[in-house]
Image 1 (cartoon, helix red, strand yellow):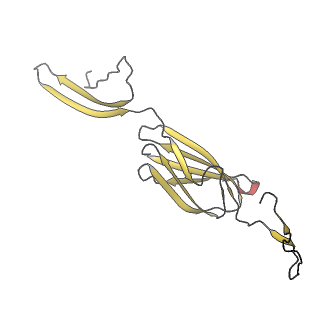
Image 2 (cartoon, rainbow, N blue to C red; image 1 turned 90 degrees about the vertical axis):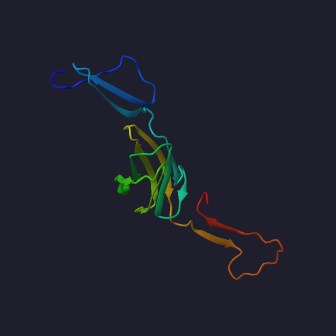
Image 3 (cartoon, helix red, strand yellow; image 1 turned 90 degrees about the horizontal axis):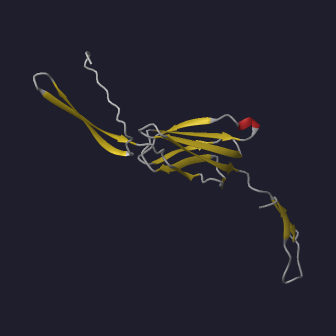
Amino acid sequence: DVNGDWSYQPSVRFEPGSYELRATVFDDAQNTNTDSVAFAIEIAAPSLTLLSPADGSAINTSDVTFSGQSDEVSETLVLTYTGRSADNNTPQVLNVAPAGTSWSLGPETLPQDDIYDILIEATDEAGNVGSIEATFILDTEPPPIEIATPVDQSQVTNLRPAFSGLTQPGS
């Protein structure tokens, strides 16, 4: 146009991949100049894997290291964890610095025993967002245990004594 601006949008769709755009200009005196740029079309969101804590796991330390992997380098990675109990349900948002396709954050000290939901979102260079959700249980309290028989300091006459006690159901 009169300002030197130009644009062009192809009528065909490109497939995802790497391309080079080359533009050439001619003036009335037949002078030419060429410029080129490399670009990529990427429409797939990053695929994420949470390595630690594993989805569905129970852990016994409040100092938690979160770690995982992505199938591609992420520009940004945000991890959000939220406890399910009423006094622990404020989302904690952490920005993670990815190192290539792997990332690690922590240890992060969690405030209390609870069931925690995790949401991890990664954004790649093209702006595609991938996410993964997981849940884990923080349980730092050991289950109670009590020996009922034999009684402490007792003497038994059976060479195959019976032992019994009480603990938390499911332990």
